[in-house]
Amino acid sequence: MMMSRYKMIKDNDFFRMDGVPITKEEIRAVSIGKLQLKPNDVVVDIGCGSGGMTVEIAKRCKFVYAIDGSDNAINTTKKNLERFNIKNCEIINEDAENILLNLDFNKAFIGGTKNIEKILNILSEKNIGHIVSNTIVIDNAVKIINILDNKKYDTELLNISVSVGKKIGAGHMMIAKNPITIITARL
Ligand SMILES: C[S@@+](CC[C@H](N)C(=O)[O-])C[C@H]1O[C@@H](n2cnc3c(N)ncnc32)[C@H](O)[C@@H]1O
Image 1 (cartoon, protein in one colour):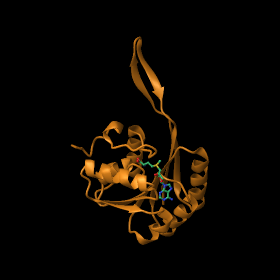
Image 2 (cartoon, rainbow, N blue to C red):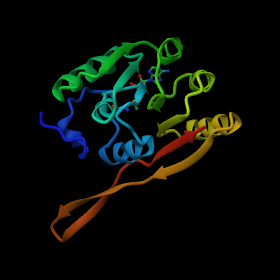
Image 3 (cartoon, helix red, strand yellow):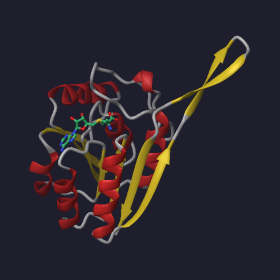
Image 4 (cartoon, helix red, strand yellow):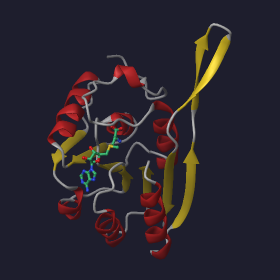
């Protein structure tokens, strides 16, 4: 499928599997902006899910490690990497906290929050200076911002609520999507 590094891929163009979530287009756009990707960046995508963020990150940097502990997520990500002809990515079927210490990277995107304390401890031990985290669970957002603030990161806390217009008889109505919290942390 044709792809541009300047354009976000439409949600419906991704291969989708039941029960494997994907980051929606507008949230991907803001998250990519917050990662401030450069051609030499090596990024870890923690909890890659369907690979929605993996594909968008890989289009804009040197290399991505896409990690997920779920077989279905890994298979979905594989299919999306093939669909969009992404070669600069290694997929790792593992809980991130078991593998992060062995990988070399300079930025982290967090889309999955199981064992988040352990993951943030490892990122901080490795001196990773740029972390972007998305969560739909408000309790996790509070946990993440508190941990990162205590580790002396400069943090930004955003909550994004997007409504998308839909044509109806009388004109257009706005359909609300779930709000997502995006946390950016810099050293
Ligand atoms: C919301 S989905 C991510 C969606 C993804 N960003 C996308 O655009 O397709 C969260 C994923 O994180 C994974 N996950 C959660 N905690 C994890 C961990 N500690 N290690 C590896 N995977 C994890 C889950 O299995 C799930 O597939």
